[in-house]
Length: 206
Image (cartoon, rainbow, N blue to C red; front, side, top):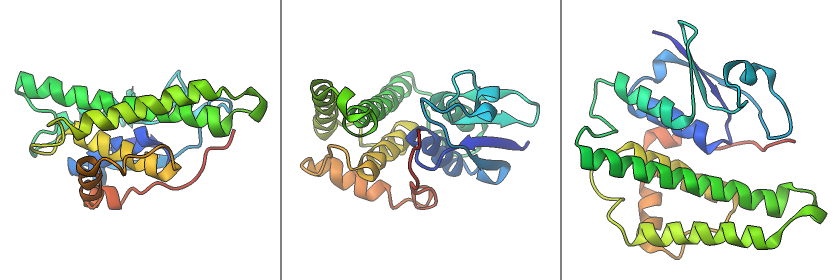
């Protein structure tokens, strides 16, 4: 089975999918094709595979496409013959999905913060909205600092969180350095080979 992953080197969602593929030892079956996308520039090849025009998109040799990083990651885990990154135990299964959702929310808040502080034309920026997004980031960091979500065997939630936090650092967004447990955990997970091989690069052009 051969697959094509429509990718973007500065997308935390695309990187999460590729990191999971590597952890599942599937990357030799995947051709990674970089595509630039933005909210205001239409990429026809991506739109042809995903009506939302967003990456990542997984295209199988049968022509079937999967999109949304959470769906793609679950598919990779289902194909893996190694330890499952999405546990079968119901309690662990759903707390893992909860952590994955929190990681996605961190990225969403960061994207909105960047929109209001960097990407929107200066006269149209809304600082109060940006402050609200920064507050969401700090609340997420505080929760993680005081939770046990970072413990236990590696799972999809951990990989999603690692790629999210590394994107926060990459973009220079309100960070988590003042949360020692979370910061130490981040510094450890980014030393995994799957993270080293998929480091962020590039910028979004509108």
